[in-house]
Amino acid sequence: MIVVSNAGPLIALAKIEQFELLRELFGKLCIPQAVYDEVVVIGAGKAGANETRQGVGNWIEVKKVKDLVMVKSLLTKLGKGESEAIALALEMKADLVLLDDYKARATAEFMGLNMTGTMVC
Image (cartoon, rainbow, N blue to C red; front, side):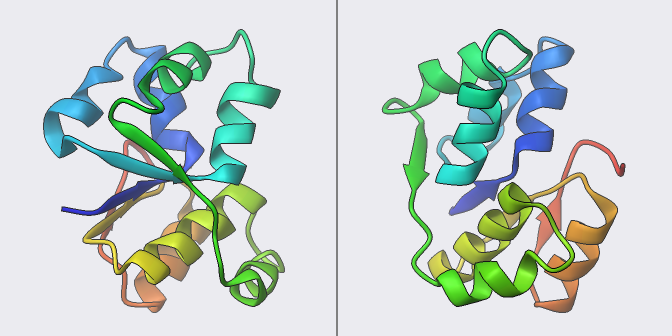
């Protein structure tokens, strides 16, 4: 199963000390570079940063998005992490994309992606 995640679910589950649920449920997780940067680099010291960093190379894989035109198009209404997560999910033909933001969920649904998340913001 190919699963791509945005930052929201990583942070939300880390906040409630349930980050390992991602590994238990999916085994492996892919995140785009923008999500890694948001959670680990910009979010250093915050919920999800250490958990994500420790998972990379183990069960979390950071992938670069190839379709930069798609990302640029999505950036007109979504953040960079959400845009890259949706573009990566499309590129990888992901079985599931994890998103919490309402606009991102609506966009993913419109684009035919299967999605879930931890909450709707």
